[in-house]
Length: 434
Ligand SMILES: [Zn+2]
Ligand SMILES: [Zn+2]
Image (cartoon, rainbow, N blue to C red; front, side, top):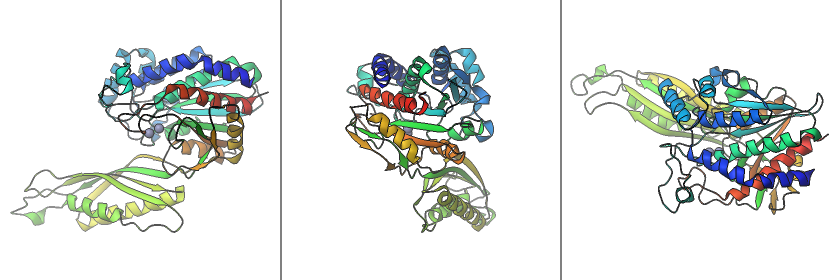
């Protein structure tokens, strides 16, 4: 059966390249994946999967950093004009772009889930003629958006894996679920899907990323720990305007409150229990030279090696924001714009993947586990499954990259997707085989 899976995967090469290039040409940032999601839903339904989508698959109370209704509407129109199914797009109104697709094999057996992310980055793709997507006419046509992280490849891999699984379903038991997640960038898309039930009843979960810490196409990483827990905040300070020359004492200076906050947030004491991070990434304040600034906005994030360490950073952040506002007689509001828990792969799950990659000779260097050291909201899904007595891991499949992730020259050799596809499907087979 494993040889059959490998052959079926090889036969998907042209399709997977075509799909990846189509998605690359039409990138969609978080919560606007209307076209991507509609194409993927249509394909999964054709393959015989049962779809859960729209408001049922995205709990709106947990959706953060969603664009305005106006921007969402524009993007729905754009998606339809680029070939998305209008009726499906309509059901994703308000940004409900995440969905999952199920196939049941038997009443007994494991319930395996794969998670693939769909969103693009806020990056403008280079116009350099030497950049392959420009040369071969699949560069982004959506202004300010680019698949610079490889999520176009992830969706293509998910659809190809689902097709092979459907072809070998008679040899499998239990069930499989493919979770297509929106808004991974900014760590926003996983939690609304978890809260909608995406991971309920799942006993095994696999997340996958191309490239990243796996240096080149000869390398595969079977597991990861030390996903940094993270929280993203949008903070606004409110003061009072006044004439800066005549009546400065009547003003309340929101700019100073924000500056005090920025300096002191970065001065939060390090924690002896492990690694923490903080960053104030953007500060905007004030209106004019001779006006006491009445508003200031901070865009910031905290991180921690464990969820507890991140909680510590969040608590300290709130204390400093409050004290900084108080110092200037201002008030403030704080809005959570994203976040994820920490996480680590389960040993038993790493073993399945290690076994699977033995059959993929392209991988000469097999790394069991790495320290991730960044945020990935898949960690929330994996932790949820583990807290409910399941197991999970995160695979990084090496690719030969032309530039790093989130770079406007990001591109890779698509032939590398076949070993990644084989790894995914063989892992699934080892877990679900009769
Ligand atoms: Zn990314
Ligand atoms: Zn990514």
